[in-house]
Image 1 (spheres, one colour):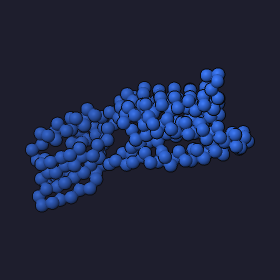
Image 2 (image 1 turned 60 degrees about the horizontal axis):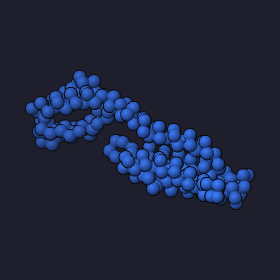
Image 3 (image 1 turned 135 degrees about the horizontal axis):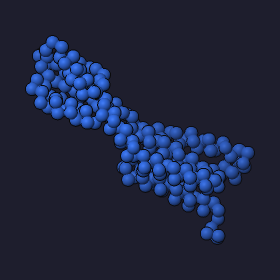
Image 4 (image 1 turned 180 degrees about the horizontal axis):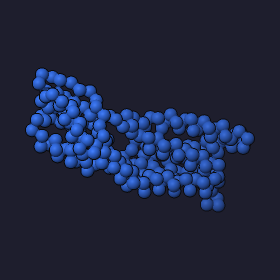
Length: 211
């Protein structure tokens, strides 16, 4: 390594750290995976090195700030809305942190870059189970019920939701002939959702339901 220029060593280190983070995103089949995250850390490191050469330490922060702004546009492209959830926020945040790690390597703050990479990997790998556990405690689902219309039909099903400890928000309701089509957003533990589904399956008045 002694004969390898320092700048090349920095780029290789940036590529290694980016690859470690990108491998996790690739494993989970995310839009920004192995190659993307690696290129982000390498590109950020190169731009930081060039900023120090061209502008010196006095103006080095300008290119770093421009890197952050450019990465913001890239991260925004990974965010999309699906039904009632916004997906891609974790990937966008990972891209942003990967750029910061590349900047740290380019500025020769190696311990900062290594520590940041370790923390990112801990969050991405070790906290998945915790996140799933928290989601299972308050799962949000959309329910669509189609049933024969009778007086207080809405109240009947909302009382059923409450009996299972699920909070509900009434959505669009419509009546077609003798049928009522109702939409609700329910929130609560997975087990309570399961019990509600079992109750709906045994409801002879219910003609159709989606969740």
